[in-house]
Image (cartoon, rainbow, N blue to C red; front, side, top):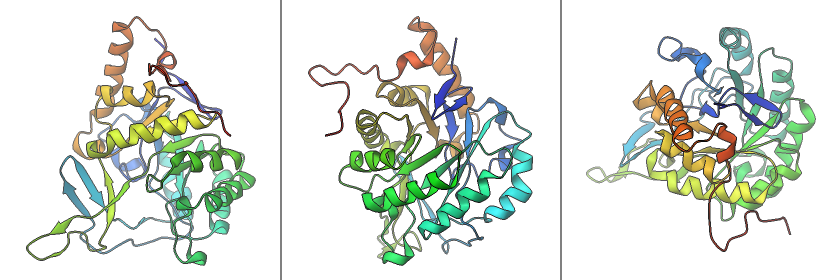
Amino acid sequence: MNLAVEIGGLRLKNPLLVASGTFGYGVESEALVELSSLGGIVTKGLYLEPREGNPLPRIVETPSGLLNAIGLQGVGVHAFVRDLLPRLARHDTAILVNVCGDTVDEYAELARVLSDAPGVAGLEVNISCPNVKQGGLAFGCDPRMTYQVVRAVRNATRLPVIPKLSPNVTDITVFARASEEAGADALSCINTVLALAVDVERRRPRLAFGTGGLSGPAIRPLAVRMAWQAARAVQIPVIGIGGIASAEDALEFLIVGCRAFQVGTANFVDPGVHAKILAGLRDYLQRHRLNDVNQLVGSLEYPGLPRREEPS
């Protein structure tokens, strides 16, 4: 029974990756999770320099979800390469590094640094970062800026380039196509949904920063819809993200056209969730008399609707 998938030239032993920001840098979970059982690890986001992140509180539970405003706290790329990457290299799994930047040049420099680092399998490009040179608008909310960032990273590395698309846009297919045109090898869909939780007694936001990113089961139907739209709009592979906590959740993303998926918020709830999801995938394939997980990709039956939207 084959669970191996290929994403932009990168072969994964199975389609399950852990999502950026929910699994630290991977090394924190060595005692809890058999890292070599994972298809891949997407690290916590990295800038060139260390960042402290936002003030506390910066995580709040919501119905069927989690609201966070961590502020991309991180050790910086050089400390990661020096101290953490060698530890991750001991495990037989693909290491994708999530990269962040305040400018296009910073993204490109991160790509150059990581291209020379042994053990990095690919780059997930976090385009939800604010462009400090253009008033703080997130790179992922303007297709021209999305193109610029992805193109700069593409020109700076031979590694697979995987932009992580924001759901906080009107039409995700515009950003999917802009990324593909800029040279992306695959897409991650989606990042967290901008949201606000209020302490009604104090009449103040429950997060110190104010707004935050909503993740968890509450956003899964939205994520499935956007991943489906993106997969129909481009020729490159899509990695589905959003509220996956079971094999059935993961299967939704595969069936609508994703070639792999990332588990995020569920990592905080159940350290054994990965083994359960992979076992559930194998059981599903057996029950449906399939011998390859790739047979599920894009198998959604949707009467009257073309299987793929061709670019206009």
